[in-house]
Image (cartoon, rainbow, N blue to C red; front, side, top):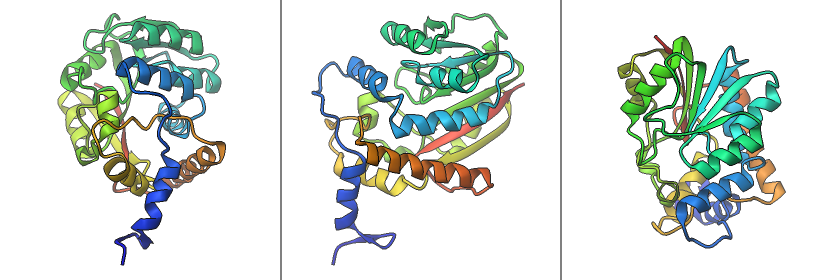
Length: 271
């Protein structure tokens, strides 16, 4: 008899995971530029980015004052921000100069080149700061980055973070995108509290797809040399996965908590 998880035979779930997380078709080469190129190519339509950006936009609400997206990549979130709030005042910060240039072109917002460990902005420059999957990066020291976020936010400013969840989920994907750490909700709360942030709220999300994520990360693509999960998807797969995340988003709005998920979303206030 095949092993069962959640009532489905493992023999059935494995091909499902292969369908929902197909391998990118590009060759492995200069990893960092490749991942930026993949991000730039797919983030406007790929279900994961669309779900992430919607979650962060919900947490931000209508921005008041200036917003900074710290570690903005190739600008997908800033472009979505402009779509939802055309009059928003926003700026990006990105370490990679080519990605920063692409982010500015894609979003129409100014994007500075620099590190989240030493931001090229004056103190109390922003009312809102977003940062998605940055504190997990190997080149980033979380406490130092949070100190900089505290510095550039004005008193009472809002911080919105997204971070990958659970170190046991660390996989080839994390290696490819240089994620050195993953977090529990409790660890994120402790980090933000130690950095001086208040009114900290955390929530797991991407919970309904977590079983497929585990299969993909730990079984289907378990070898260190496997590629990241960033890829173009056939339209029906993309729509299906986005639909699942939208169902979860609506359940969360109704107050349903999820005890685990692929990511942790945190909202806090600069004291």
